[in-house]
Length: 178
Image (tube, rainbow, N blue to C red; front, side, top):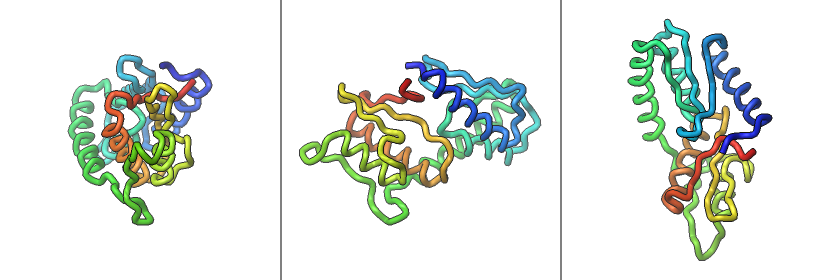
């Protein structure tokens, strides 16, 4: 499902601000939603990034879309760095939150899917309905989150993985409901 124009424009503005904060100039950047990827593709033409700069880009954009660079040597360096960053992110997945609470588990006999999604969001430190949207057909729509501390993002990723354990292919990743 393609996001609505209004929500997509807001999402693109947020990505552009983040890229600017990371030192990526706006000219030479294309951000498009790719239906076959079910994600945003962030194409960067700029070159001359240090390894530290590429690390910051990987850390800043890991949950926002697929990043690629037009310059092949830059792309290959980025791919190696992104692999390391994602390994660290997955290794740091939070099973407890800042209060020391374990990630909620799903009990089909005691709670609905909607209640479980809300419990996961609360555990992550988000307001209910922020990034997990249970649908009437038993699927759950996962919305992207922009900004926030890395540990909150890791808890969100941990929550998505917990939901996948419950739902399998009924967990859908969409940019926004539009």
